[in-house]
Amino acid sequence: MALKSVLEKGGVEFGHSMRGKRLASCLLVEAADGYSAVIALPEIDPDSTDKQIVAAKFQKQTGKEVKQIYGSSGNFFQQLQNGAPFDMFF
Image 1 (cartoon, helix red, strand yellow):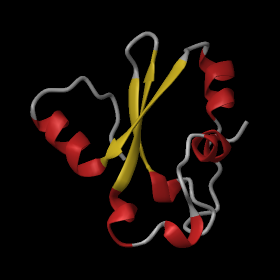
Image 2 (cartoon, rainbow, N blue to C red):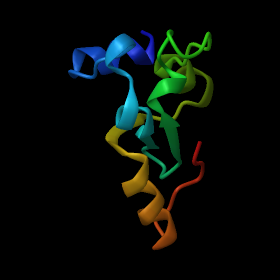
Image 3 (cartoon, rainbow, N blue to C red):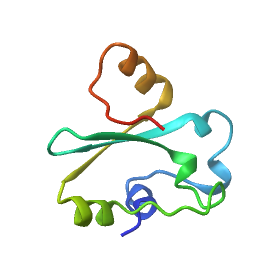
């Protein structure tokens, strides 16, 4: 299942609503082993990019469970500055 589809089921809107401050929204993905990645929501929006991010493919390739956490890039940036254990920040 495409990550965008999972997020839409959780109430995240893409397309025309992805404007202004919403462009700074991010998704923090944490694996069961502590691996973390932050993905900007516009990277998932087909109106903004032609990339398709697939959570199930990541799990299949790595064997790591994906735990999704939603939030704003500003909050994640502040957490990074305070030593939060992120492995990636996009």
